[in-house]
Image (cartoon, rainbow, N blue to C red):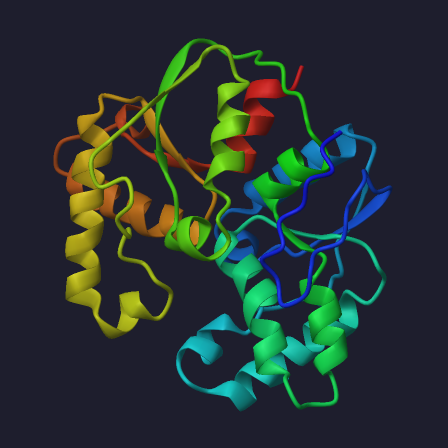
Length: 268
């Protein structure tokens, strides 16, 4: 089992061994739009002998308010999450964006406030989903699916804030029947950016359209991403592009969350 740890938090991240219990922070978009991604995380972790705890009162991580320059509103939302994840278990997040909010921004958001220690402590045990599977569990996957080809989209948070693109790629490399095809604009934003898609909708739409063109140009059957914000934005764009041409959903080029794909490919 790998014991190498990144030290990209406000404090050095502790060496982690396979835990018996973890928390799952589901994220707003998983909860509302892609619940199957959250359930796939649960299935994959439980198969590894880990009990998954999902606090029912969890809501948003506070990132929309934080990114909009509303620290007091963000703290009010974030404060409620601190109380829900108080036991010293890893917190698994199927989104680099929300994981980045916990790990990097909670210590800053609560600096000088009564909950500063709790925020920093929580930040030290937050893991993006793929990062946890590779760096902590050293998971080994057995591909049970038919041959397929994929394009891979890394979110901006996965690439630049959490730096978890390598774990995602390692997981896909373990699937013998899966070919990952590289594409142009691999390092470009999909245009979602949380509130950016609302505040600058025309620019966001143009960015998403460019990304979809290059994903499809690979000739892959589908694309994979670890962030549901990107997934929602790109799939919505693809639906609009294909609506006049495609009559059956199975004919459409679409994306899937990494967790959903891994569970589909490895369950027996």
